[in-house]
Length: 298
Image 1 (cartoon, rainbow, N blue to C red):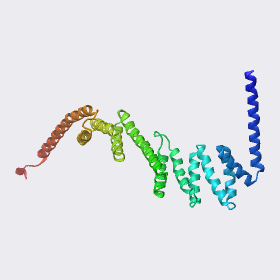
Image 2 (image 1 turned 120 degrees about the vertical axis):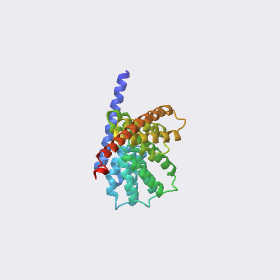
Image 3 (image 1 turned 120 degrees about the horizontal axis):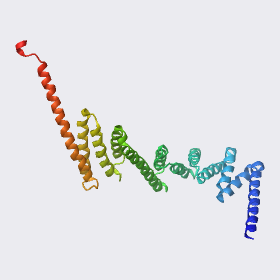
Image 4 (image 1 turned 90 degrees about the vertical axis):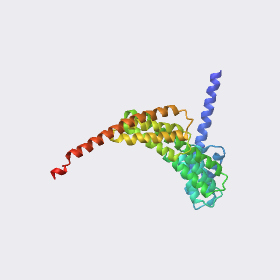
């Protein structure tokens, strides 16, 4: 009994769906411009953004030059139809186009905000390329600059902070990636140090700076240790510089003891390097004396 009722329900649902599709197809083929516009509005009000969007997309170019108000609303609602269906790239384009076309519209401010918000929604995860994130930040800042008193200002500011957090995480992961893969290639130690220096410049107040400041000491020590002898003095001195900067800023750090070990090992390594440099300089000096003719021979 239950199966037969379910079967009847499926048949009924199929009939209703086919009827609706047939009605929509007939409207597309035979409906007037006005009928399609009114139907699009009804679909939109019912949150049927798919069918509303199909109609708005079709009639928008046909309304230009005929009914200015309908043309304006059709473009505005079409942008929202794309946004509601998560077609964020198309939505941002349509909202921006609306803003540029109808700058005196009562919806102009909202359209410019939605352009920026669509870009925000289209921003990828932090492990992916962040070009779209930078574009979204720029668009949100442009909106704030254009409408400094807007009701959307506070939300726009918050969205910018969220996007900057994403950029911060991307930069942090990049620095950590160089550090994690450093054993495979000495160049990665150098890249890790450079990436951490850049991170601290770009995000001076980041919650990751304590950890990265320690990792910079670690990476610089290993870079110096594995370098050729003629590079070691300068690179071990940089370990000291990074260590002193670390303990000055984070005197109670949980990484302090590990950092101290790198510092102590650096002093030992540096002593050996300086001693070797002294011996080399003395040998060079003695060689110079032996090769210089004495005054009695002149």
